[in-house]
Image (tube, rainbow, N blue to C red; front, side, top):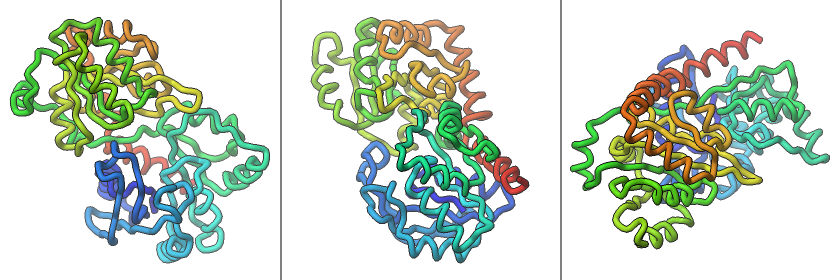
Length: 380
């Protein structure tokens, strides 16, 4: 059994399907019936699963949240408890942080109705785990009920160990997977004509338009790039209005192209039009980049990537991209220029990116690692 709130999103469903097809297992997915999200995840601002589904090798069961606008409060207890009692799963994998309300809820409920079930977590949070004095005992007792967990980056694992997670539990870093059936190389020249992108070179950004994602650093870097290099922003957020305003200034006029949030299939087409994808995240006191899924998606499309050294970006990119100091617009412009105009570097990044996407960052790679992890959990 996998418990994950965002059941209406396509990417998690592809992971469920890969798990069901790869392994000999009965898979039940518990998702939120209604979940409020940022528009970058769904243009409507809501993820909704109205009824149970049973296709693609797994069972998808919507369960109401206590508060659809605050998923961390967990699910309605009665229907969740009924489902666990009915399925009696060997493993309950909660795709949420090791200090989430849902994990706490399931870890203790399973003691009453399915004591043999092994409970795991999957987290992204790579800031130090700071437990208040009153919460320290709560979480140490809760973690003692778990069989282990996985995270999308290594720093999250180390922080959890420092916070006192039991040393005898299984922990592993498993990258979040992306679909190479959607994010794949396409003919960029044809797509540019079809999409009306009439420019020589394109730098791309995909994601939330907020300060910590470094969108203004990217904009500043454009001043140091030739006039025939344009910038394509795809996403939504509070900085969009400022981007629109500054795009009319003499430095940027005609070079900035803004698009709203889009579904994965059209997004893959726009990504294939990019010469370089940039993720210039800037760390904040309460946040740093936890993964950067667009990096993997761009690699799957054969697009070279440039990232800052914020959080997990370097780990996800490996040697298949270029890394610059966060907040440094000049260094960013230099790396972008290299990715566009240095043919030897560009070809190397394309080749290594495609290989890394398939071997480390794909849905297939994630499902294989999860199945191996589940096997070790059951053996332990």
